[in-house]
Image (cartoon, rainbow over all chains, first blue to last red; front, side):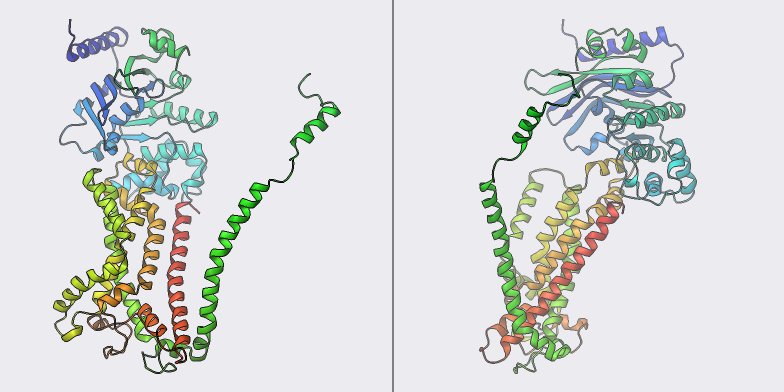
Length: 286
Length: 323
């Protein structure tokens, strides 16, 4: 029997519903949701059929081998893929049930609510203060920047280290400090969601530990989605984990990513329901 | 053998002998020598030229000093100066700065940041590169057939054969000549802005305009500055297009001031024109020395423009690097 895409999606989301109803009747509100999400770069389909529900005040981790499309999916959540001219999104990405790719949606407004921290710390070549104040300034804020910068740096656990040198260049900070500065910069616009694209991959274990602590502290006020190559990190910090993998296309040797399993982190790591997930988390591939 | 134990003496000597280099790398030495002689040859030619010019012309500058700069063109070598030539070159520079810089940088920003990446854009891109390679004489013809005629209509006072052959027409012609260079170098500087910086800016909700204004342009500023000021230096040294636009030697207008904008509608000369003209005068007329002196002045002007470019670039680069 031919199974249409719609049927398959219905079944998938029905399955997710079942899991949640069975295990977590008090699950928090859905902040981000993808339905049937495909991302193309030109004619090439980089990711297919992703259905995910990101819940408020949780940390959701996206793991999987290289090329599985986890970063691509993350970049759909704040329309960062718009910057790549050939990128095209099919399906839906909903934020509080509003279609982020709807006709009248302004990507700039989306990014003010859904902030992002990148793989490589990328402070602007400006002062520490100007880095944090950048988002509020481009949003038109002129007053109260001193307070806002201080609060943002405190949230990012960086204030004590930099309070005496706010006018110094951000490029003089260490890698771990720079990444916390980038978190402070993202928090300064008071977003609802924080997307983190392998935020610790360029950092040493101590700096990584600080970022992870910080994530735990701020998750009560924000919804966090983190892409990570590091399975231990996903296991340590996240509430839910989405495991992606890549499949080789028949027509070309490029890989298309897909979502294999999405569940509470505990289940993904101790009792995965898909053989591919088990093989990955136990280190047998990837 | 356990790790950490000392190697037996025989083995150590053996290893030492093997690690020490065997003989001289003759091929490498010859190659290096060839490279050094390339450098020496290139510098030597320049050095001889500059030394020759200084040898002939420096006396004029020390003897006459400011008089050489402030005297007008005359038929007697010991009275002739380069006042009008410097003035023409100055105003040409003003036109380049006022026209080629904003239009060139603006076009570069559009091409890099806004234009869709399609066949038309690529065609335009390739053709701008081709334009940068068009001989300057061709721009002179363009200047003669368009800008001179336009200036003729624009300045009602000018009549006769020389109508339209004005400082303004020359300035616009040279601005157009260097426009492709300004576009290319600016576009390259803008393209070199790291993607991480753009992403960071967009990531906190900046618009495209915010991102360009507060991040892309400051980051690209050193590169843009270097390119534009080098193109200015090139414009100041061009003679061929000016000849076609109608630069004259002698019979210049009555204006005496350096900065009077009225002279834009009058006939002009410029440093390269004066140098070319004087260089063709008889050997014992005294103009050979004047030519050399004028070359020194032009070199100083161009080197000053380059020095400003380097200073500004270093300042912006230091700022960018957070020093």
